[in-house]
Length: 241
Image 1: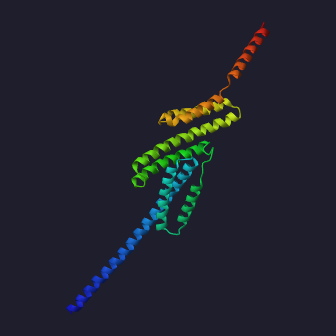
Image 2: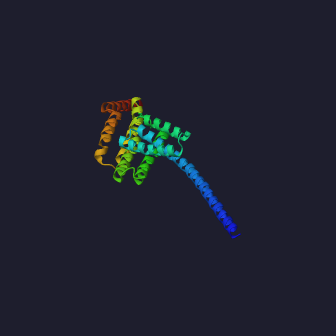
Image 3: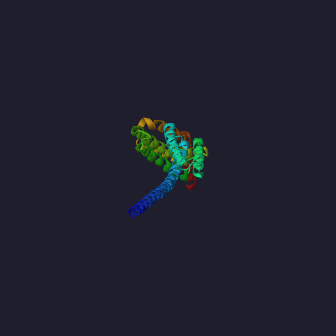
């Protein structure tokens, strides 16, 4: 009788242990599925934002060192997606988007309107944040990350100055010199306010000075206008007499 009770007790213990193992397995699997789903959602958002930023940087003719570092960082995210969801639609979608971003090349005048400028501003600032993120994760050393941030700040300034220069050129070609000068002066003010060494600014300063000289009325034209005005004034006085 005692032996039967012991067998029954051990059987209960064995069943309970198996039940605990099964419950643990199911619980762990559910947690893994939950983590997988959550992480894939994060990777979708992060990789999508980073790829759009990469495309904007390439379009703005950003330094290759920066775009290469960002490209490598994105590849790491794609590799993680491949581990979590091999052969998924998400993996194919992000891979295709990466190929598109890699094919992006600098386009003259691509940031010539307010909407394009705002888009460029948002993504260049996002690139600065990504530099910090890469440094925190050990993908980029701190000194290099700081240098990239400074370069991106200058790129941000250049994008806005170039937009005004392009608008100035547009109006100068149509002989609307006053509007052209207004845009060139805006570009000059943007560069002047920038906190970078004067040596870095100098090429822009020289370029804008030449453009302002082109947009200014010539001295001969100014003298001619003044002479014509004086002649008209004399005629008006003569008629009054």
